[in-house]
Image 1 (tube, rainbow, N blue to C red):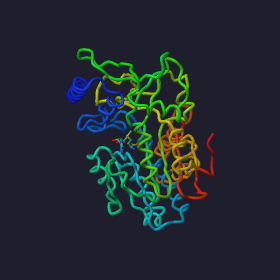
Image 2 (tube, rainbow, N blue to C red):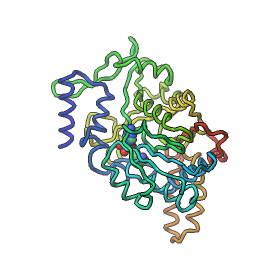
Image 3 (cartoon, rainbow, N blue to C red):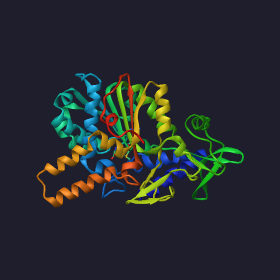
Amino acid sequence: MSEQQLEQIIRERIRQNGRISFCDYMAACLYEPGLGYYTSPGRKVGTAGDFYTSITVHAAFGRVIAREIACMWRSMGQPDRFDLLEAGAGHGRLACDIMDFLAAQEPVCYAATRLTLVEQEPSLAEAQATLLAAHLPKLLWRTPAQLPQCRIRGVLYSNELLDAMPVHRVVMTADGLREIFVALEGEQLVEQLELPSTPALKTYLERYGAPLLVGQEAEVSLAGLAWFETAAAVLERGFMLTVDYGFPKAELYTPRRRQGTLLCYHQHRVEDNPYIRLGQQDITTHINFSALMERGEELGVRTVWFGEQYRFLLSAGMLDEFVAIESADLSEVDKLKARLTLKRLIMPEGGMGDTFRVLVQAKAVDEPDLGCLRGLGPR
Ligand SMILES: C[S@@+](CC[C@H](N)C(=O)[O-])C[C@H]1O[C@@H](n2cnc3c(N)ncnc32)[C@H](O)[C@@H]1O
């Protein structure tokens, strides 16, 4: 029902104003109030949802990030005010795992910490408050529109935020760069190639992309870049930690990816048609880590570490999580299950371990001493 309603709204928009960019189409599919994939009821992440994120696999992911956050606090001189901000906090699972770890293992850091949760979908605040009940006095909630007013001296982190932002899609033709728009033929949504809706697409590709071959499609995340610029300004001093699937530009825009990276997820199946199940399936793309690193350098947010998730987790404390399982009061079968679950987070060769990358950036912190810098370096 809501699928038809959303399709009707999109058709009406096109009838009234003409074709819309794929970016506007994707924004409606994901975020149309009450009808979009992320803005309508229903489980998205986990076994009962459409896809897993590292957070839903095991709390060890959040605990290792928390260890690194404690190192960041030390690298900043153990300030007695330490801000955390999670963007795209979802149900609050990662925030909860981080705060639980800090409270139990890093009490001085925990005492200095306050946590701001920023989430596009306001109804998730209730789930976050329930999950984080033990830490309520330390919590603040802000909407994405309020993000520019935040001032963070600490760590601004996200897991799978940027891959959920709407993107423009472009194609290189013999006549030059063209953008994919969504139009109507009768009642049918169809794609049309036209001149780009904004010169920002060409500028982005020149700065943060790679030359496209004729026939090659690619995505451009102007929304992701704009979010990053805001986040970099919000961070007065400290670190940005970004976990997501994506590549540096040479890998992202390689001619091998002739169709770009756009994919849809529904009940743990991968689809490539974004024009079905409107608002009922996730639409996502791989992110451009070069854009974050290069724009970061221009904005005084310099890259400290970038590499695969497995390298990050193993360097930053995952081995201690395996040791903790061995000494836990669990049966041998449960220990084995826990070990196998943890392994999923660090499995390379197509597992979460190297599909996901971690980017750590620092602003106004000299010579940070972080776990990721001590262990396995980036490849
Ligand atoms: C793929 S989900 C990831 C959720 C959670 N971080 C996890 O790993 O399970 C992306 C989340 O980002 C939220 N989101 C999208 N754009 C956002 C923005 N500009 N600011 C804050 N949250 C946003 C979505 O509503 C959604 O909850």
